Image (cartoon, rainbow, N blue to C red; front, side, top):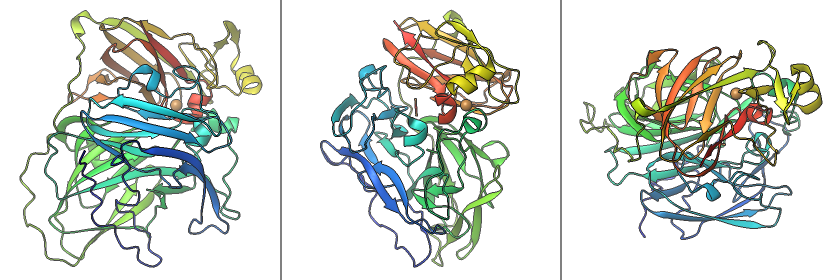
Length: 473
Ligand code: C2O
Ligand code: CU
């Protein structure tokens, strides 16, 4: 089968200048059965005195880009070259439950030296990604993730694509070693924030350069693979269009205040018309951290065109069952816990436990409907039991002092409202960003029988109890 790869020009690496441009990872799906071999790899980060040992796939950071066309079948072998258990979860893809990659819930974890074959159809186009679901705060935090792109049958017309996988690592720059994982103070607060943000595995910063051509239209896919960092992106002098959230097309629109909020696990597809003069430079900023991620540099080349390309940027939509809001069952889910909030009281194995004991005895800090789940729990009592084919509205309340990107496996849900205000557009997602003390209503159709994980994608929060399953029967 023929697959487009967009690999054409691999950008030249200028001496001493990190280039973030798309093309750093080969596209593997052109092989009939791509293999993802997990293992250690060593990289010398600019500014670090020693090499850093990352964990990744196929010796790459991030792992290879898996790219298919809508309607194709993916067959992918995971070979676990780590010395601990692992799995692969296909974030956002509507796969059959046994292919969902959740240890002890949808499959037995893959032991060191063992392999597992994942096989599923690709009914939906979009920007997705993959990562382990075993001890994910550490495995993802050490670099195990990659992009998974499914092309539309008729993609929108652009001159070029950019694919950015954003990462965030917490590194001791003296030795190059990762800072310790698992500190309860991180798990109970904003997660394990890093000090080295990466774009496609290369450190971001003012010295990183993205070269562009005046007049071109770029489709820019962004994936936040950081365990905890929330990006709030703003590009000086430009106003990109949002055309998809989490891979699902949406009416093209300008983001509020020209800032793109991307919590862990979330994706956005942007269309950017690069209409400034040749030779000009602009900064891409993360306004929440007050940092510059990269410098956009217009080449000294004659403009490709002088007015933006007129073509439509409205993506072909995926087809899936839409909830019937009039007949929907209603549920509510409360998130509680974390430091600086009203003390959460949770239950472990049906026994009530104080917040203090949750933290000090179990390393847990968050509850979902008063339920605390440990990531390595072998059994999860479902938070909700839904009936296959039925529609549901779930109203979620964040009763904590922290941000939480909330993710449901195996489904797209529609975001109906934010804090009582209806969403501006018909907005489908698999991960929705909840600000502190906020309320969001989502709607969905229960798709396929099985236990589907529902958790915060700040992976330290998930590990500290902010996770559960929604059972479809
Ligand atoms: Cu991206 Cu349950 O995960
Ligand atoms: Cu969270």
